[in-house]
Length: 241
Ligand SMILES: [Zn+2]
Image (cartoon, protein in one colour):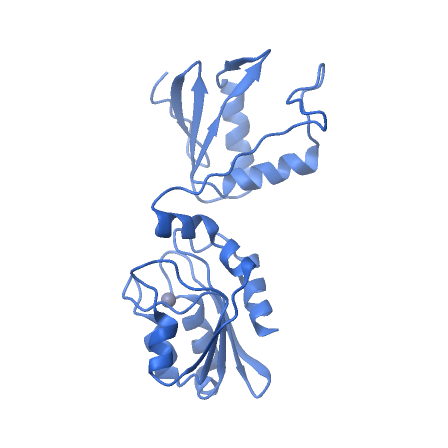
C-alpha cells in the first residue's frame, strides 16, 4: 500500500524534476507514514532523501518504499544509498530498478550493507519515467506517434475541421507539452502541407495555457523541407524555410 502512495506522489508531480526522473518515496514506522517526498525541481534532492528528511529520527529502523531503487552514484546530488544507510533505514521496497548504468546497483549495495531489500516490480513505476528510461538505457529518444482517426480509418472528415473533440485535443496538448520536440505535418487532399503562422500562434497559446515551463522544439515538415520553430513561452523562431 505504501508503494501505491509513493506512485501517487509521482503522478501528481510528473515532469517537475525534468530532466531528472521523478521518484516518489514514503517512510513507514510502526505501520504509520512518518515521511514522504518526491524529487525536487532543478537538480534538487531525490524523493527518498526528501522523505527521509521529513521522517527525521523516525527513519531509524523504518521501512522505505520508493518508486525506483535508490541511486548509487554521485550526480548533482550525493548517492541516495548513503542517505538511506546514514538514516538507519531497516527495509527498502523499490518499484523498479534504475536503468541508468552509472547509477544502478543501489539495491545490491543496500543488501550488502545489511538492509532488508525487496523489488516489488511495478509497470507503473517504470511507465512514470518511460521517456527518461529509454534515453538512459538505449541512448535514443522515446517517440510517441499520435494520429486522430475515425473508426473507418480516415484522418479527415469532409467539411469538419477536426476528427476529435475538445477532451482529446486537451490530452494531445498535454502530450505535446511533455515532449522535448514535436514533429508535425498535415495532409491536405493527400499532399503534405506546411505549418502556418496561425498554427504557431495556436501552439504558443496552448503551451501558455498549460503553464508549461519547458520550451519544446516544434519541427514541421513543409514539402520535405524542415522548418524549426521554438514553442512554449519563447517566440516562434524560423531557422530554415
Ligand atoms: Zn538518488
